[in-house]
Image (cartoon, rainbow over all chains, first blue to last red; front, side, top):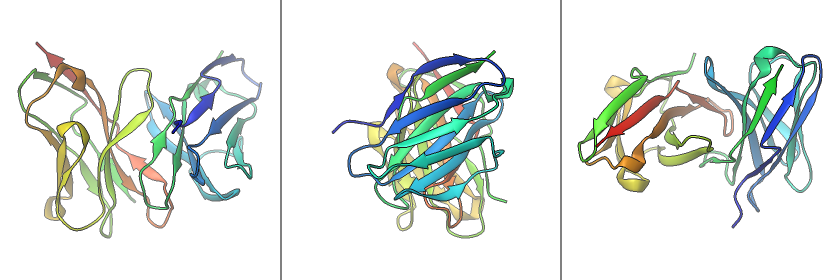
Length: 112
Length: 114
């Protein structure tokens, strides 16, 4: 069974630009969640989607958004990038509501 | 507010020695608790989880953790560490009524010396 796939793995943007990250969950998993990982703040929950609906949202500004498609694939978008948005963005999928999260290898975003 | 504290930022253990990584949580009810491991350049992998029942939980790679409600702790242990265990370890608690949203501790980096 293929794991969680995130694309792109690495990207460099400049301040003010926007970025879209993609996540393909494990087949059969309907929940996809996103986390931001930085050295200073650690792992922080961004949002979770289940059956194309945002089920939960973390404490991030509105510049961070996401969506989920009917095939459970998910994208997250960050608009008007700031230097502080440089981070590893991790996507995780889950089969059940209170179950194990399966993480992808992440997309490393550098904002210059 | 829910929170997870991992008091040790970095631990070094000799290969073959035992290991204990500490985790304390703040949570109003019975928590769902997890330990994840992250190797450099990789995503996170679940080692073990506690939902209810037996307070001693067995995980993969020879790890175990004990849930102690009285101490609000969920410490991770391994009797004999291997060099391949060198990684960063994260303790997490599931947010209340929030699907699969997790609150993570800041992590403990484990180094293994020969």
